[in-house]
Image (cartoon, rainbow, N blue to C red; front, side):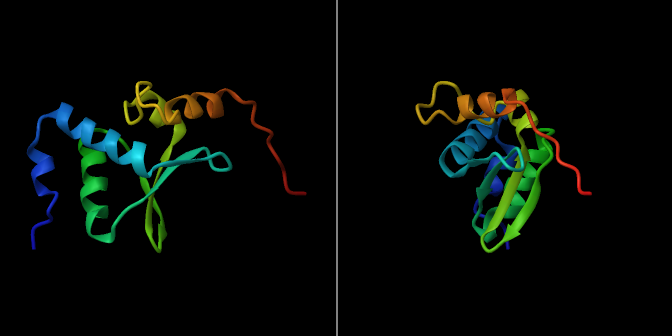
Length: 109
């Protein structure tokens, strides 16, 4: 059965990027502890979102199953336009702030 999002894979690159921006702006949350942007995804759309990211050269991981959750390294998010400074929710600036904070490395021992 074909996904209801199959149309997006043949859309122009700008449309695909805008689609992902809308998705991550609305569903994404910054996880400071893992330095990732995470977003829950409907199970029927996981493969399409992952495929779309790969087609645009972005690596992502599925880190949860209930609901499926996609995670992206914040360094990738900063360099690829998945978040926009124009959107008023501030996630773009939250990523910049998270990446500029010094990280404290811990060792087990």
